[in-house]
Image 1 (spheres, rainbow, N blue to C red):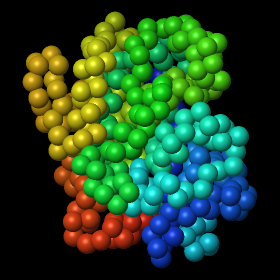
Image 2 (cartoon, helix red, strand yellow):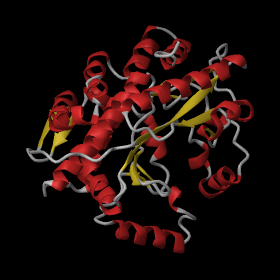
Image 3 (cartoon, rainbow, N blue to C red):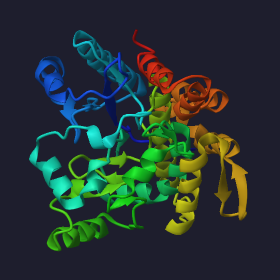
Image 4 (cartoon, rainbow, N blue to C red):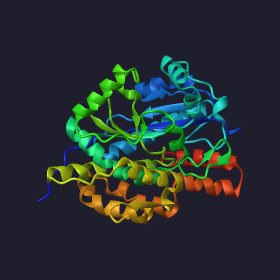
Amino acid sequence: MQTKLPELTIGIEEEYQIIDPESRELKPFIQKFLEQGQIVLQEQIKAEQLQCQVEVGSDVCRTIGEARQELIRLRRSISHLASRNGLSIAAASTHPFSSWQEQDVTEAQRYIKLQENFGDVARRMLIFGMHVHVGVPDKDLRIDVMDQSLYFLPHLLALSTSSPLWQGRDTGLKSYRSVVFESLPRSGLPPSLRSYAEYERLVNVLVKTKCIEEPTQIWWDVRPHPKFPTIEFRVCDVCTKIEEALCLTALFMAIVGKLIRLRRNNQAWRRYPRHLLYENKWRAMRYGIDGKLIDFGKAEEVPLRFLTLELMEFVDDVLDELGIRKEAEYVHTILAEGTSADRQLKRAEEGDLNAVVDGLIAETREGFD
């Protein structure tokens, strides 16, 4: 008899582009958004480093159905707010052609200090992400599951890719956001950790040596959240369509649920060296769902599409218990129709980059228009 899983609460953060629908360029407008939007969204709407970025965060959700309603509500609210000001929003991890050198910085001390510390590395962060929180109250279990989950991060990055274009050029990568973000220190795949105490010792050393002021300045692809009892998955590009975002959220829930079940049965997923895991992450960044990852056990390349089907088999026994089968199985649609990155590249080949922006705006609104 299988062990019953604990309730897995979830939360989703998304960062959107604020766009002028006539020029299709990014628009510095976050201060107006905050003034107008906080009446309705209160603490769920936030500024980011650049004035053309807006971040929203869901309430804590107990089911994927609640997460669906939250995402619809948040996207609809931000879209309506933008429309009232003659603007649009788009969910994609890079803008096809707007230049980072021309963006206005948010006048907040944390962002000013970020640019003082990192110069152009910080200034070129014209990227947009999605963070998925999965609640795991036990601290050591949180670290254990986080460490085992690293193997699957390239799979989910590939499924989320939405940043193939940068400064008006095809970068040749499906997730160029990952390249830009990894120029920051304390980013990318985290070190191997075996206990929460080990994580705390690491944080204390970084604070003591003035590498960071507090733990939120650790920007790993996955981390124990410094303030909430969650594993925060940060590896993904922001998904353009709501259904894609819910699919990735469901897959993160499924992976956490499955790894917890293995732990309760005195089993564990195999841990691999970081340099091997990074080979797979690079392939996911470069090729997305059309690439091949390495099966380290067999020492051979395997198509990402096949590995995704293997992942679905691996987590199958937790999908119904967590109530996420419908959302998780949307992955087959992603594999069949491509990711946002694939659709952007197709539009770029068929026409100009304005058509890419128009497509992003339209797809961001799917599900609530």
